[in-house]
Image (cartoon, rainbow, N blue to C red; front, side, top):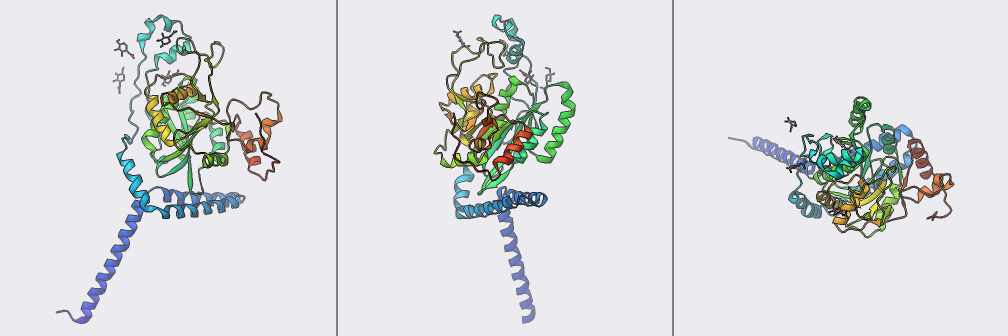
Length: 416
Ligand SMILES: *[C@@H]1O[C@H](CO)[C@@H](O)[C@H](O)[C@H]1NC(C)=O
Ligand SMILES: *[C@@H]1O[C@H](CO)[C@@H](O)[C@H](O)[C@H]1NC(C)=O
Ligand SMILES: *[C@@H]1O[C@H](CO)[C@@H](O)[C@H](O)[C@H]1NC(C)=O
Ligand SMILES: *[C@@H]1O[C@H](CO)[C@@H](O)[C@H](O)[C@H]1NC(C)=O
C-alpha cells in the first residue's frame, strides 16, 4: 500500500522523466531539421571571430558578419513551413546518383582512327586529343560532397593546376573567401586534374593533398591537366554539380589569375531579372575559328568546319544560375568534346537555345589595347568591374587591398 508521500514521490519522478523526454525529443528534432546551414554558419562565425582576433584589423567585418547572421535567422524563421513542404520533396524526387559513380580510369585509345586519312594529317596534339576524345569521365581523387550541403547563394568555382598553390592562397584571402553576406552563403572550390609533367607529379601531389587537408576546397580528378583537357574539367564539374549540388542559386566560374568583385556580383544579381537561363560574361559573338597553326587556339578544318562559333563567354570568369548548370550537364552529354573549353560551353548553350549575355563589367580578353595604360592598374577602374583578367598573386592582393580601402572615386569609370 502506498501512502500519500510515496504517491507524491512517484508522481514527481514521472513528471521529471516526462519533462526530460520532451526536452530530448525537441533537441533531437531541432538537430535533424536544421542539418547543414546553421552549423555551417556557426562554424563560419567562429572562423570569422578568430580571424578578427588574429589580425585585429577586421573588427568591422566581424560586425558585418554578425549582422548578416542576424538577418539570416530572421529570414529563415519567417517561413520555416514553406521550406519543409516545398523544398524537401523536390530534392528527394531528383534523379541524382548521389555519389561520383566513375571508379575506373581504364580508357584505351581509339585506334580505329589511325586508318583514316584526315586523322593522319593532324598535328600531334590534335591526334592525342582525338585518340582519347571518347574518354569522358575519370575517377575522383579529392572530393567534397559536403561542400554543397544546405542552401548556397553563390558557388565560386576556380580552375587551377597543382603547381599554383600561391594563386589559390591569395584567392582564399581575397575574392574567394567563404563567407555569409546578408544571410547568403558563399562557398569556394578549386578544380584540378593530375599534374602534367612527371617531375611535378610526386612533389606537388603531396602538397596538393596537404593543402586540401587544411582547406578542404579542392576537387581533383584523375586526368592530365593539359590545355586540351580543360574541356574535361568543364564536363567533370557539370557532372559533379549535378550529383552533389541541388540547392545552389548561382555559380561563378573562372580562372585562378583574375580579379573578381564579389560586391559587384551581388549588386548585379540583385538588379537582374534573370532567374533562369542566366549566363553572363565577356561574350563574343560570331568568333571565327583560328586557322593559323602557330596560334594557341588553332583548330584544323577536320575538327570544326563551320565559319563561326556559337556565342560564348571568355573562360576567365562568367556567372550562371544553378538550374542552368544542371541543364548544361545534360547538353554537354549530347556533344562530342571540343578542345577549347569556353567554346565547348558555348556549343552546350546553343543546344539549350540559351543566348549568353554580354556585360561590360567582365573583362576576360584583356583590358585596353595599350599594355602600359594606367587604366590597367587604376583601382577605381577595378572597383567598378566584376572580373578583370589577368592578375598574379602579389598584384591581386595589392589591388584587392586598394579597392577595399577608403578609395574615393570621383565618378564611375565608364570605358570601352
Ligand atoms: C583495365 O584494362 C586492362 C587492359 O586493357 C585490363 O586487363 C583490366 O582488367 C582493366 N581494369 C578495369 C578495372 O577495367
Ligand atoms: C572502333 O571500331 C569498332 C568496330 O567498328 C567499334 O566497335 C568500336 O566501338 C570503335 N572504338 C571506338 C573507341 O570508337
Ligand atoms: C587528357 O587526360 C587523359 C587522362 O589522363 C590523357 O590520357 C590524355 O592524353 C589527355 N589528353 C590530352 C589532350 O592531353
Ligand atoms: C563538316 O563536318 C561535318 C561533320 O564532321 C561533315 O558531315 C561535313 O561534310 C563537313 N562539311 C564540309 C564542307 O567539309
